[in-house]
Image: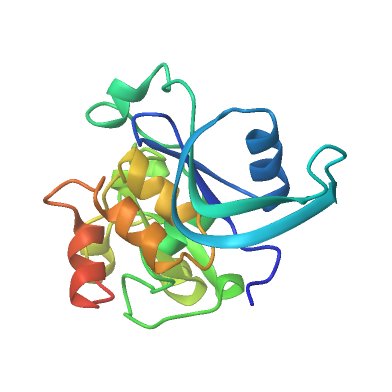
Amino acid sequence: MLSLDQQVLRTDVTGMPLEWIGYQDAVKLIVLGQVSYALGRVLYRLHGGINAETGCRTEIPVNAIVATHGSHPNAHQFYDRYTPPLSNRALFRRDENICLYCGNRFQIRDLSRDHVKPLAQGGADTWENVVTSCKRCNNHKGARTPEQAGMQLLAIPFAPTHAEYVYLQGRRILADQMEFLLAHFPRHSVLRRRLSQGKVLA
């Protein structure tokens, strides 16, 4: 039995992954007739009142993936030019909670965002210039580049695509949801390779 906080993946009618929603929002979309089709396993079956005409009890199945009418106005950008917002939560998930200097995995409370090229040296706060670092390594590196600090960077930072960012935002992603998302990852995706090979680092 799934807990009621299991997320539903919402897409547009073309299948473009958009966001994770709770079952209440999914039910609302279904009741309002905004769901074009549904995919994946049925997560919940919600029961309502008795229909006066048929005498049957109302039942609303909620699938793992629901596609809503319409397409995202900026869908074309999600493939080439889209850069998702940078957050520590998504960054740490991108790097599997691993410090990209010492190679150890840490609890979120012990992690920090490190700028490979420090802000003090003109570095930018962008996906391609930030990595997950434990606080000890970050303090040791300070306002220096890895080369200046004599530290080796274990993986090259990268900006996730829109579909990869949706994946990074997910919690307890189910197999059918993961399969759907992977189909939208670029062929050369670091995350695709990592997930298919079961590796932690790129």
